[in-house]
Amino acid sequence: MKRWLLIGIGLLSAYFLTLFITGLFLVKFLSLEFLFSMMPKEELKGVNILAFGVDDTRSVKRADTIVVFHLDSDRKRVGALSIPRDTRVKVEGYGHTKINHTYAHGGESLLRQTVADFLGIPIDYYVKVNLNGVIKVVDALCGVEIDVEKDLVYTDQAAGLYIHIEKGKQVLNGEKIMHYLRFRHDSEGDIGRIRRQQKFMNEVARKVTSPTGLFELPKLIGTLNSVFDTDLSMSQMVSMGLQFKDAFISGSVEKGTIPGAISLINGSSYWRPDLAKIDGVVTESLLGFGEDDIIEEEEERVVTVDEEASQEDRRIVTNKEVRRVAEQAEIAPDVFQRTDMKVEVLNGLGIKGVAQDAASLLKDHGIQVARFGNAGSFSYDETLIVDWKGNIEKVIVLANLLKIDPERIIVYDRPSKPLDATLVLGKDWNSIVESLSKEGAQ
Image (cartoon, rainbow, N blue to C red; front, top):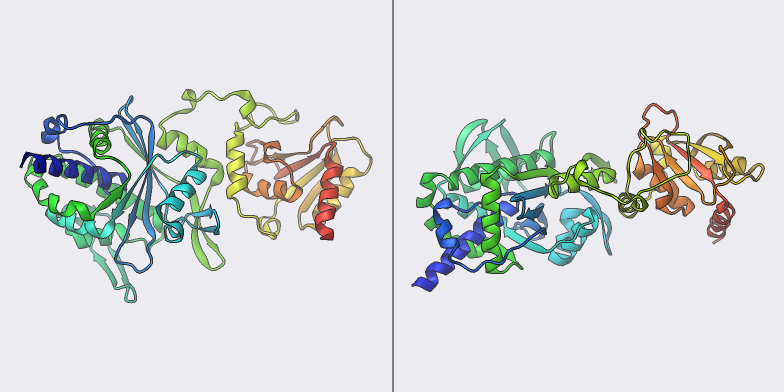
């Protein structure tokens, strides 16, 4: 009997951890802490956990909810970074697609690899949640009270989905909760959906830590096995449950979302991530470091010998950030026509007429050249690109076209400057032209 009691308590702890990690909920009830302290624990420091929800009722399995968590046991902090399901990412072997399709293509391993490449961080563990099992869990809790901010109405007869939830504070049962969490058919789209998931997480955590929550917990044990799958051991789950509890009680669970905007590409709606801002969100929201906490070595930054712009205007951009944009950005042949990017070409190697020839070459590739002339000096060994307005994703296309190392991009924040970018020709320019000529001849 004692053995089954400990197993039941362990599963209960793991259950709460899993749901919280997936953006649904996680917290351990305080009255059971003395029991948790009796169980074996394996402390985890600085780990990143990929959590995602899968609806097993669908014929095509896709990751419906994707969250990455970072556990900081020293500061008793948990960072949670939500990735919108329609986020457009580069998937190995499949090109650019929605991130929620990744699970259907290659299961947990491919989703794990894609998220790690996209965020530039290692993924140590994963937790997969059966979203259909959440209905039983909420019903076992006798529902969850939610203050619905507006009427949520949507019908999809083909999918058998009928959502009708009225505005106002009310107790929602398991089926209504799933409708509340799935609704995304308004101007907010997936971002509003993520916000509702985070709100639900807070309400459930508040309920299970209330004095009445203890009486509802035993009802949950029978539903636990159908809820989640993970590569975490039981001792790790117990340890993490305690860490999540400490973070929740102290208000140290910080939530963030991948920045971006809704974009229509080839007739499909995507969440187009702002690739240049991902490092900042990962560092601050997920890992919990501010600018004052980060010390970067000078050689890890993109540098330039150009002295036109002041250091105060310069935005600190790491090579890692530039490389991410280079790897994730999709190269489209008509990108310049669509963005009306204005480029300046400067002669930085001292060969007469080279800037004019380069300007003609760029125009042949559909690039709008605003002007050409001489640089401040003719001592540039390597060709570089100055991004004046922080449009890294656009400038990467130019670098890719000319086969220029992305680390030779210099970024400034000067939104009032009439130019978008300046191409400074270095002594390697002739080899660049030869490479382009060979490609054109093939």
